[in-house]
Length: 412
Image (tube, rainbow, N blue to C red):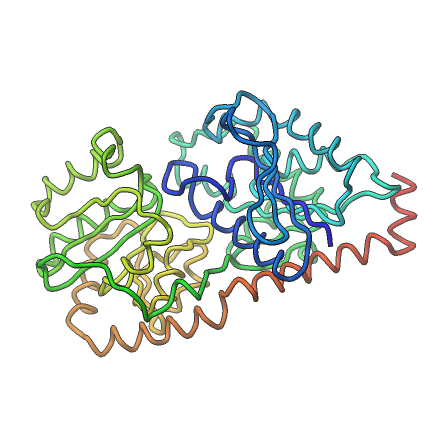
């Protein structure tokens, strides 16, 4: 199949760790590469955010990234990109006149806006089916961030329209299905396919990063933003005197002093009396993450909300037990009492209790870690995620060519 992915702000070529570069970038790149390995011809369309970027870049066998001229060729915060999505859609429409894909897969709501608008014309006498993955829903963000939500005012309304117009919606967790139903999305339109993990790199055996002098290491990693709950882990550390906390994520270590969230966390560590046991590493290259994860006794991921949460899956794949907040995608990925432990979000005392329990019980850590690695190998390898995604594409492509679908299009 010819598969076109649209990922307006999250390029698979981007450096990870910034405010708008994280799990979605990994997901888009890894899924595209896995589909390429399955013999498909994949193009990822992402916005040009640097004037020096070439129009097209090979990414993996069968996959290339095309940079779309929409808005200024500089970095723009993702919440400010809606104004350029009409231009993005016009570019897609022109490209699809030349090379119509079999299916389009949009990632994030603004990508869906551009993809659906770009695909409303007929290409080669047919309309191209558009699959939508949101990665995060505005309704959830507004619920948890309220006035701190910087999304465009019309996001929730537009998301609902996108979800209903799309040929199918791929949700990354079961919790998202409930949220989509509130948008009026029909159940038979939604398919649950989780994010994946590279189980060849993220595995229990392999190099292990050096450790400090503390008896135990607790690790949390991901984007350095308030909703990720790193402050909760720092507050819990006060009651876990035998452990050091390593925080990976955010800008390069050289620039942590200029980062608002990093400064807040350093200040909090001082107030809690644990500054000597908290290490902020800044950005860690994705290739270096497995060895860092393997150096930890426990990985912690306690955001207020989490559309999916790739960090716990990567930790599990490395055989490290996880304590995760009982929210969103974590409810699917971390099997409570089997591959890790659930904790209420924003509850440092409860987190401290679980940390003390795990760190005091080596046999429990081994049991959870072993089960975690097995679960990750079975459920989350990219080859399986690609196969499940491909099955959704094939169903839509087959349906698009049925006589009933042709008649429906003729009436529209």
